[in-house]
Image 1 (cartoon, rainbow, N blue to C red):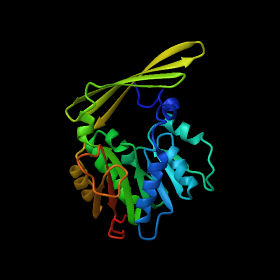
Image 2 (cartoon, rainbow, N blue to C red):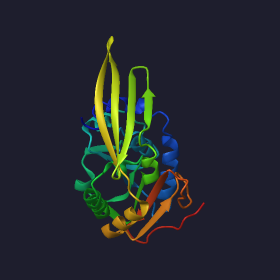
Image 3 (tube, rainbow, N blue to C red):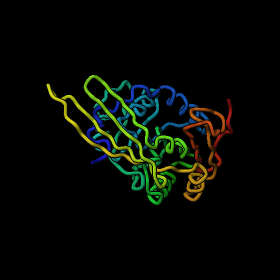
Image 4 (cartoon, rainbow, N blue to C red):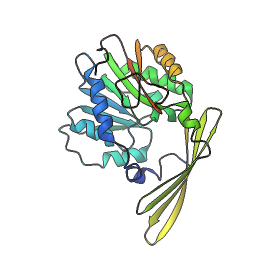
Amino acid sequence: MSQYHQLASAYDALTRDVNYTAFADYIEWQFSRKIGGVKLALDLCCGTGTLTHLLAERGYEMMGIDASVDMLAEASSKDTDALVPPVFLCQSMERLDLYGTIDACISTLDSINYITDPSLLQAGFERIHLFLEPGGLFLFDINRPETLQSMDGQLYLDETEDTYCIWQGSFQDGLLRFDMDLFRQEGKHWRRYEEQHFQRAYQPQVLEQMLRQAGFVTVEQFGTLKKETASETDSRVFLAAWKDLAWKPKTN
C-alpha cells in the first residue's frame, strides 16, 4: 500500500474545505517580512500543486517538489493563469537538488509531519538551508503532538459523487497511522483500494533545535495562519526559520 497512489486523483475533491486563499494570503505576509522580498520560491511537498499555482498566479516564480509521482501528475495537469507557470520536480526532501538558489521555501498542510524519520528530516532541513539565499525564509506548519494524539481511535469520512473515503487513526509511540479505505466508482461498479499514511508527532521546540543545527539563525513560532506567537489552543503551528538576520520583525 503506497501513500497518495489511488488518492491522488481524488485529493482535490476530498479537500475542498481547505482555504488555499487564506494560506496564500498568510504566506505573502510572511514573504513581505523578508528584506528584498521574495521572487523565486519552492513549494516543498506540493502535492497536487493547488497552492503552488495560486502563488504563481500572484506573480511569484514557483517550483513545486513532491516525492509522489501521482500527486505531481495532478499538479502538472492543472491549467494556470500565471505569467510564468510553476516547474514541478519529483524529489524527496532529504535529497533536494535544485539548479540554483531560492528566496524562500514553504511546506504546508502538515507535510513535515509525514517525514517520520527524524534523521531524514534533519537532512532535509540542511538541504533547504543550502539552497536558500542569504536572508532566505523557510516557512512550514505542523500538527501539534496533541492534535495527532486526539485522532487516536477516531473514524473519519470524506465523500464525493464518485469517491468514498473512510480512514481511522491509531496513535502509538509518537506515530499516527491512518488506515484508509478508498472506494472509487469505475463505470457501473465500485472498486475498493487501501492506503496507509503515517505522521510523526514533533514538538515545535525540538524542530527549532533541528533547524538551528541545520544553520538557521532565527526561528519563530506562529499560531494557525496568525501573525501572533502560537498558543496551546492552536492545533497547527507555523515555524518561520531565517537563514540569517536579514528579516523584519513581526508586524500586524
